[in-house]
Length: 105
Image (cartoon, rainbow, N blue to C red; front, side, top):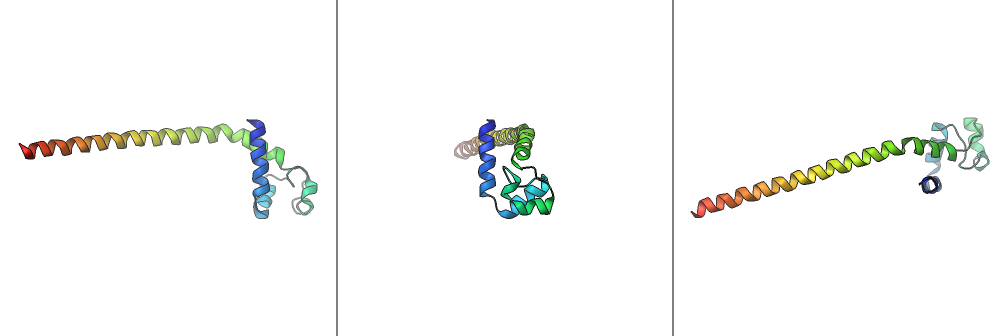
């Protein structure tokens, strides 16, 4: 799980725009992904030389279970909503069939 998350973080960093990278560097007070040498302008702008990778990995590790819990709660709510929709559909279908029987009698 950890190396998979690390790989996804690296891919996300590579795919992100310069504005996104700068936002991350400011937010996490870091420069570059693996080393500050990757972004020398950042060191002068932000004043930190720590790379962003360990800070991003720590943030994902710390928030992983919160994200997972939220996803499971949402999935559960969707499942309950689906069951309620099926129940309502069956009730409506039963009512229609009862009305048809009453009309035919």
